Length: 148
Image (cartoon, rainbow, N blue to C red; front, side):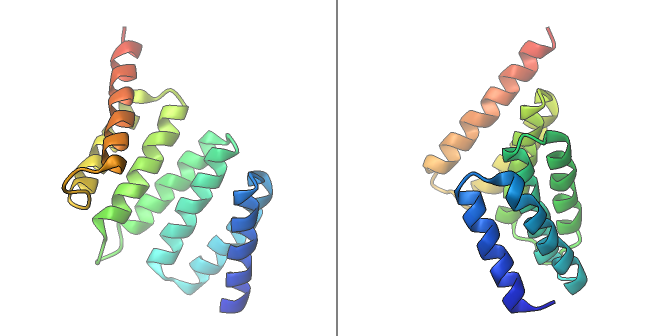
């Protein structure tokens, strides 16, 4: 792995992402992921999977986004020094992807887990936590409505 080329790849991906050119950013992110996997660094691998899930979500490739988000969580589960805030971000990403697929019950479960983990970092509650709670409440409500 060449740190300079990884930095260049991340820069290219970020520029494309900012321009809303998600389809073009996805193959670059896959290269970043492959490099991270070669390095063996759990945090780099899980972060790469999480970013891939975000790009796929933004490109409306929800099935693939879900798979990538689940990989991010599975890899991060191996980290012995987990940050609950990072875990919460991964859980919320998966919740949003599941909600986009109208799988509100499962989305609400992941969303509620994320809120529990976020709470320690947003005490007293701030705007971020308030908005996150609102999103999860909508998932819960839609879950109830979809059950009939």
